[in-house]
Image (tube, rainbow, N blue to C red):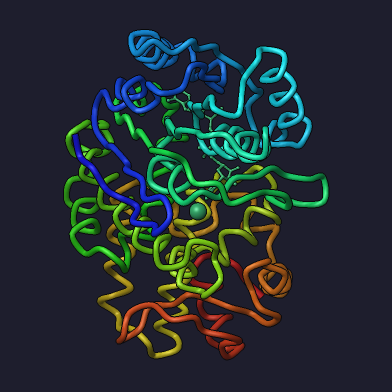
Length: 363
Ligand SMILES: NC(=O)c1ccc[n+]([C@@H]2O[C@H](COP(=O)([O-])OP(=O)(O)OC[C@H]3O[C@@H](n4cnc5c(N)ncnc54)[C@H](O)[C@@H]3O)[C@@H](O)[C@H]2O)c1
Ligand SMILES: [Zn+2]
């Protein structure tokens, strides 16, 4: 089993990565009498038994609590419902919660664990590639409001993360590929070896080879763990390097509705970030080509696909990017350059136009 420690001063925790990692749940939660396992039907049917039997063997009384799927289920009413079901079942302050699922399950179960009895221990069991490489690590939990995504939430670190790469075998293909899109933010600039793996070993990766997935997830988690430890509560801006490709991606998701999955939008976003960096003379042609080689190898889009491209105008996309909640007033991008990644504010209009045109967004 691969192990990455998230080295937080107060409560460091381990991320265990590899086939069968979920079997460790019982050992880790042995001291807790009751454990509420929060999951979704599509996940529980495949992987629930692995967790439930491990908890039972460790002597814990465990019960499965299902939540709905999709962003609509990431709501305060789901959190309310979970807390009420926990109470009815008799979950105490000294008991624990497991989040078994993708980012939606992790965020909503983590938030319920953060507020139930003012905080109970919880364990993350991420079952999507996106959740394993990103959302399950770092302690950000929360829910959406009708007024916007992730508008309520809490920092609540898990006691451990079990990234069982076996679980990725039952993920729908588009979901899996979208997870690869999230990895681009690490692979294009922060970890050259990861970039090589995505580019040269894409066939093994697309066949979901568990050993290779173990290495890929470990590399991503190592980067996330380091960034989280340096800036646990997102106060200093260190975490912004994890937003590579995301300024455009968020705008595309907002303007495009559900046409694009998050990882697909990030794929277009990292190509845009590379083109913008070149237009600003921060990187050369080879660096842009390196981005394209990786995104192409994974079969992810390098331009805004299909009908959506025809609907988008550069001015609207720029307006939307200005509204990004991570932007501090103006237009903010995380861009590659000679000294690594930097935050770049309000780049020249001409460069923006060139980079948007390169991903299929015309004036
Ligand atoms: N907390 C954070 O730091 C953080 C970071 C990034 C994203 N997020 C959040 O994560 C969410 C997206 O997460 P996601 O992409 O994992 O989507 P998701 O949780 O909605 O999962 C996608 C779909 O796949 C199904 N599924 C999950 N695992 C499966 C498996 N192993 N086999 C079969 N089906 C499976 C789910 O039931 C769901 O229908 C967003 O709400 C986003 O805001 C949070
Ligand atoms: Zn992302």
